[in-house]
Length: 219
Image (cartoon, rainbow, N blue to C red; front, side):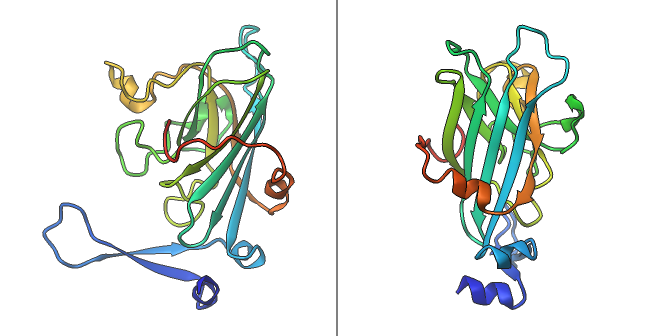
């Protein structure tokens, strides 16, 4: 059925009822799949983000490298994410937040990546790219999770935006200051990357690797 929808003509009309609206008329939202990838890859969009440390990090901060991979079936699939980071101390027990930020601009490190990607103007941790907190095991973070609110297609696509690794734990909006509602007080941005569309090959290479599934949504 999805293939028929994609071929005629790769556009899906999704009906949403406006919350809090007194009108009975639905709002028509157009979700368009990236072309030609959605046809070439069996209605599935893949993306990668090649993580590198921010330039000129102080010696106290780890040099984090790795990948964040994304996969989503068009038009109704849940976004799946694989995180594989290395370079942390083997005995490191610091939980570190990972978020998707608004801009894919790393021209000045992650500072120019802007705030959390927050297309619906809600408080943290309700942003679609609030991945949560992660603690390394023997210097490595390897996780699989699902982000039901994030998309690789349509008007709220995360393609072209940035993944940022922070130095500290996200307080999940439970802090007493305004910054808690904006960013979770996760501290400095120490590594990051830009999300770009790709082929299935990177995702497929990790299919046989052990993975630990975490809960859907924010941790």
